[in-house]
Image 1 (tube, protein in one colour):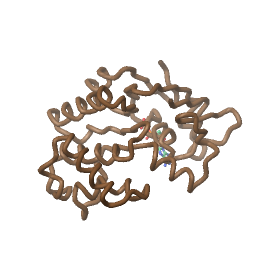
Image 2 (tube, rainbow, N blue to C red):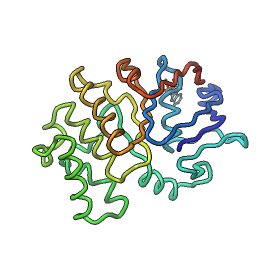
Image 3 (cartoon, rainbow, N blue to C red):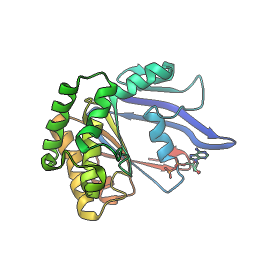
Image 4 (spheres, rainbow, N blue to C red):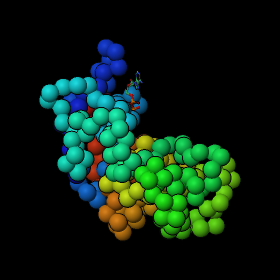
Length: 220
Ligand code: ADP
């Protein structure tokens, strides 16, 4: 479902990705692990179309057979909105909007009607155990609740894949465990694919596959 070959990235003279190859199947939960500075976030951002790899004739990058390297700004944003969900370490919810409104935003960007978006957002928030929190703003929610709202926001457009960067890095261990279990429930029920950068060993060990990065390369 995701295929990347020979991905390079430079910041100035610093080569932070040195030819990464990977292939991820639908319904897989893949953890990317490795020391700080190994290039994990950079790789995730490139897979998620938030950043570009170095231009090279030998590089390929596709999600669901769509070649991402040929898409330009507008079509890339559209593809990202329709096919990719993101979860970050810090929830990145908009503080002035409620949980429900935050979850609806990607649907509105994708031109869903208010009714449609709210119906789907409520279904997701209910499914994630947040039915009594939908009209709360992020600062009225616990860290675990904020992250589950971020999961609902990532899911609202039925993405092919969710990319998560240290999703439990800011949570206490009980909330982290609950969030990790949620990822596996979503995979089991909806065949949701996840690619997760994490330092959390428990999560990495639960994953179907662990890709280890070091010095800009995948080493296993
Ligand atoms: P990891 O996620 O494994 O900690 P990163 O992908 O964040 O690693 O970073 C890989 C390397 O790239 C690090 O040396 C980091 O300092 C460098 N780097 C990351 N982003 C930038 C940037 N925007 N400009 C310059 N260097 C960067």
